[in-house]
Image (cartoon, rainbow, N blue to C red):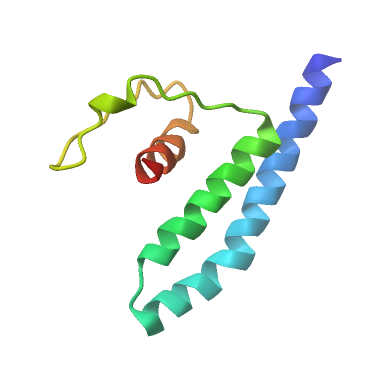
Length: 96
């Protein structure tokens, strides 16, 4: 039964995030082009990441956030066990 629930959650996540990208993405791109405010695109993208995490039941826990560098450039690497890691990393780093 848990496999069925996981499959339903996965499908719901794929459909919802795809619709989010298709419906919210193009208007936001146009708005960013006309206003010159690209930062809104990142805010909207993080909303899509949060939607996907919520629908799929993924909880993100950040440990040792005090070591994240805010005053200079840094490279953050993930082990790529899934395709979910890059958007999570982007969302987490932009929220700190």
